[in-house]
Image (cartoon, rainbow, N blue to C red; front, side):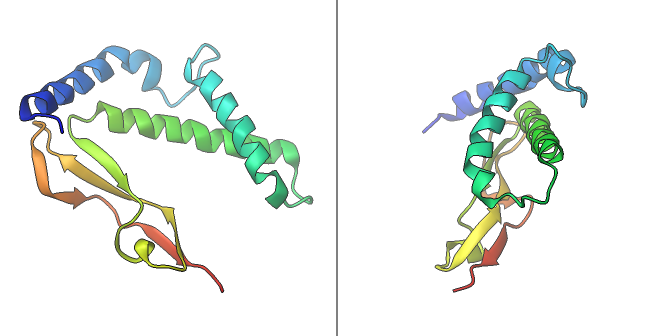
Amino acid sequence: MPTAVHSVLLSRWRAITAELTQSVYASTLFAATDPRLHNIQIAMTTLDNILRPYVDSRMDDAQRSRNLQEILKRAAQFAFTLFSQPSSWRFDWNSGEAAKSGSLCIFPALVQVTDENGQPLDPPRSFNEAVVRKLDE
């Protein structure tokens, strides 16, 4: 468990690091030299292998790949946005209805666990509700 001092220092470190790296990571455009593109390509290959059995053969494969790449780019941008915040956040996959048997959490709740000064929030503050779907039996 991090100490209060550790939480404050981590909060400041994230904000400073984000400020110093924003010229590389904050842009909504991905340059050919963007270091995240390598990881995005690896994730695309992995996800394509997992999702391939569920692909609708009537869909254009190139367009499907571009869509997946765009989703991963947006996720990378969102990750930088969360990283740059002085507050700490976590995804809650088990809140509310998601914890019930026969349900699937398709988008987790985003929960703020420390404030902008690195102080723990008790209880944590939910930014959004989890999106949960009941599985058909």
